[in-house]
Image (cartoon, rainbow, N blue to C red; front, side):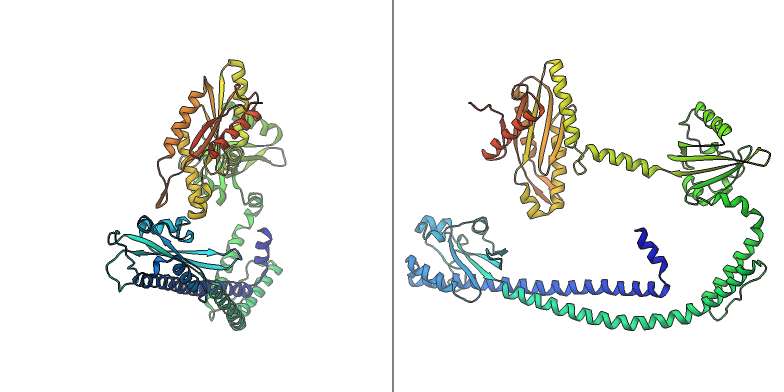
Length: 568
């Protein structure tokens, strides 16, 4: 970052303007190109959906015709018709799916006519058309549509396949069609390549035109007038004659204002020459607040950083004692020791708490130095300080991140390990038992994959809050990592308490979690072990709880298992 700032300061105004203009145009082109590509992608998506829907509609129409002729009762006729449609250009797979009403009336039909995935079952249950983008085993992009056919007395429609015992409006089954999108994807890539070529050509043309235009404007309106002003400034600097003034260019208002400002500065420098020696020390460290007092510790002057940090203006503090900044957090003994050190060594530095004008207390790093004359008498005190609030907050943040999970604010592994070791030592000393619960969030990956990682983070935070409701304040919950949690239960008598807590957790998790505008219900697979009944050290106890958790997951998830010793 520092290197970039140095380079930016080093380049000229013309180059800066050129970079800014070209950067803005580049961003504009990127945004425009993304918009155009999105439009093409949407068009290709709609076209693919229309093709798939048309194929599914044709499959249903064909089945309707076979039903009218009585050919549909023969499985070979249905299979032959499906195979024929599968050979159509661009179609990868065609299937007919029997609904429950048809199965009950005519039997299950062919194996390939049974619902085989959630998409089939959802269409049969809702009667709504579904589309889904897929990827084939060979990496080809595919589009799948599942279209329901509805029981109806209207044989002129496309979705009118009916049965004797199916009520009108019921779902008899569905048609599943998968089409190949490879050609559409290739067209999209070709469009992108052409857009890039066009973008580069336009960018090069604009680069030449803008360079010529900027150079003309800069040279005419800035470079030449500034050189004249710079020459006048150089003569004043060379001769050190503060009575001279730069000529004001009336034909160029901007440069004329610069000349006026420069002349005003020279006038002020002429008046302030006698004060330069005193102010030299004050501005050596201009990044810090600086105040200068007389020998009686009355403030003579302060710098802008002082005003920014303390919120006191210079006029408000001139002639006053720096005690107006005191927070009251330091004792009289502290200040006595501080001024005693300054009296002996001539300087002091350390951390101190002061108060802003609005009453806010803040930490600062303060340095005080005594200024003496040739006789060794103190004539001034120079104090410099910086607000270290952000440094303090950063230290606290680092300390928090060292022991807690940043997402859920739960103790991390390191802090949990320390508490577990302490709990086992106290359990040995006081002769009581300790419980350890290992929790794994069921199907958490589906939330990330379907709703996104932001929703996954929100779910983990909601889960952490509910876990806190299920245990005592003295117990410790840890996010082990990902979707795994540990709970340390201290001072228990039997595994009945672990079972009670597990039941409470599963009951609490049965309520939906709000994730933005959506809600999702999740469950835990929970395993638990007790110390010293199941293990005699922290590592063994953790392994026992982990083993019990996997047994709970293998038993069907949303389950709780206590560790059981394996028989030898």
